Image (cartoon, rainbow, N blue to C red; front, top):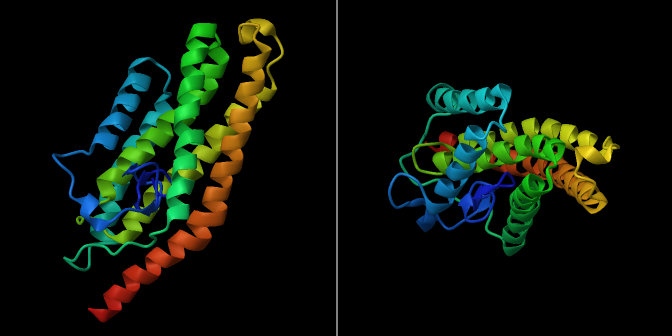
Length: 234
């Protein structure tokens, strides 16, 4: 990830997602069409979509992002050099940051959703699913843009675009968890209620910081500086 959750050569979720961090450029040469991490995210996307946990609005958002990314790559931010995009960051702390984001944003919510299926917590599943679906889609899209066919601004666009959208889905998730009163809504398990509230709050804090404290003030300026610096040199 990249601060978004994808290949870590720039910034994102564990290794094969663009969380928005930095992997060595050698990792950009994927085997086949998709990397192993992308295939995992694609599996999550398919499972969530086929199970009816994804709204038409969220699905349309992902489809629009795919179309818009290719539009921007051709019109606004084309590749200006045949050379490989230079890494923006290469820091062990950022790799740890990406791993924490993957844990809080993907793995724990997925576990929470599966437990909800067992507990019969339909409200909890419904509230948490949009965030997981969008984050998995973000990681997948970061993998798509993390190659030599796309410029740095396009790689920046994906996590910023998705993170901005997910802040609202997490807010809805947190509101749903806080408003739980009737035991029938969550299977009568107060431990699960507290876990859902804590997980939703942790995601709100982490992803708000990721957007407003890292992507916009740090990653975005560095990426544009590198892009336009190379453009002026040409």
